[in-house]
Length: 227
Image 1 (cartoon, rainbow, N blue to C red):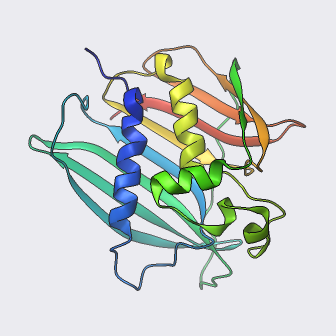
Image 2 (image 1 turned 180 degrees about the horizontal axis):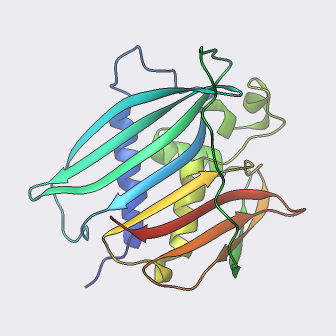
């Protein structure tokens, strides 16, 4: 039986496991509360199949200046008994931190033609429900009251939940392995709210975008063969 990227939500289950290991990073690492997820890249090097033992490594690097603070990357590497099987890189924003130096240049990809694939509703309590599964109790996701403590008018959905839900909808479009999936989180998904998934055709490469109403873009992404 072929195991696609999100069969059994394998990719994001591993990410949640890795997140729990991330809690063991040195105390010099930035605090999790209030962090904003900007981008995420996952590489599935081989089908997950019947993997029973995994070794997970997590480290933080690449501190960069940002217009709203500072960004850093959390890198996760997963091996089974045969070697590397899964890799991920997440870029996170810590607001209010000032760093010296110039701002790095960021180029947005050129727009591509996409068609609507599906749409779904993100309920008001999805942040609390996802927190119980993932262990990520960042206050900006839990309720409007806790989100307002960090300057947000309402709770917003977890970036990894949005990505996992998007990958589940894209399951039939994606290769089973040797694939890299990149997403850049744009406007947050305020809870509750409806989102609309646009995608190119199924194949070894493709692009997708998650929109809200009134022209809001929540997420842009693509999948490519691992180079």
